[in-house]
Length: 73
Image (cartoon, rainbow, N blue to C red; front, side, top):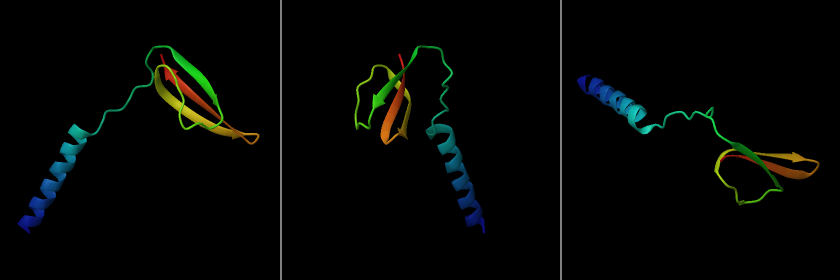
């Protein structure tokens, strides 16, 4: 029975260490700065954009795919 308690304690300790040290913190998207929305007609596997991509979305409309990307300048 002591072995079971020890195993549970070690497992709990490992989970807590993992949560504290190895999981990333939440991102705050409400910072100040310039944001730019670019429209990418059609579906492309790659595209060029300046800045850091902070959002991406694609929709199908009238049998065409339209993609938008939001970048922070």
